[in-house]
Image 1 (cartoon, rainbow, N blue to C red):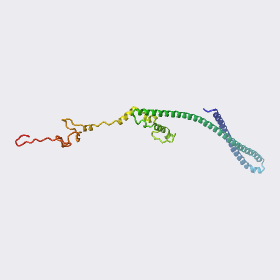
Image 2: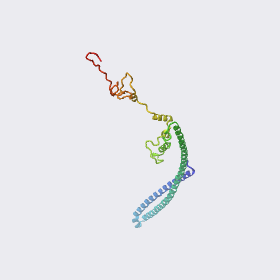
Image 3: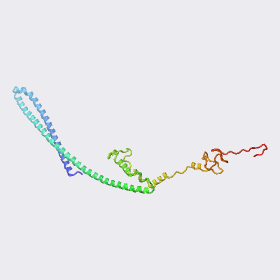
Image 4: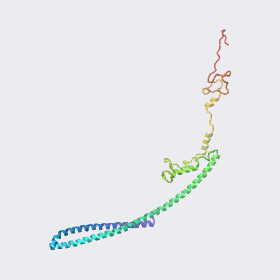
Length: 284
């Protein structure tokens, strides 16, 4: 809302602007009077020149007309002089009024600048208050972060105290909010992601502690043996031939290729003994 000083300056500036327009109009009329009087004087001189011969001849009527033209010429000349004086005086008055008007307008701008300074102070005070709250909440966040990490460590997460430091998360968030194109701080920010992510989106410690511990346990658990490895180390049951997965593997407990009753070399089936028929026809 404009104060009384601003209203007073605006009223004075308006009055001076009106006076300035009036003075300029009067000077314009005076300038037109000068042109009219000059034209009239030129016409009178032309008529005097036409009567000059008759006046020299002492023509009474021409002499009387010459006298009348001379009076009219003096009047026109006088009007020109007066109008020129008026133009000069009006010019000086216009210059003073323009100066006063400019000063009044300058005071209007100064009053508005002072009003904006008051608004600026209010905004900065609000920013300062918001910053105090922000700093207080950031300290709360760091305190909660420390307590959370201690509990995770006690729950078995041995990397909880060193993983995802909260200071880096806060710095990344503030960089996105205050840097980049906004230009509040001279910080380099990825153009595609500047200021688009909120603090909860940037904080990996918001992930469920139970899920985090489950993921760690899954990573640290020994891997289960594969079926092919288990089949390779098991012995074939009696009456069953070795499966395709067992071919090419020798059990450490099976007899070697030189032992009696062995099935032969690796990868070969055992051979049957041939029956030899002697000359007498009996089988041995």
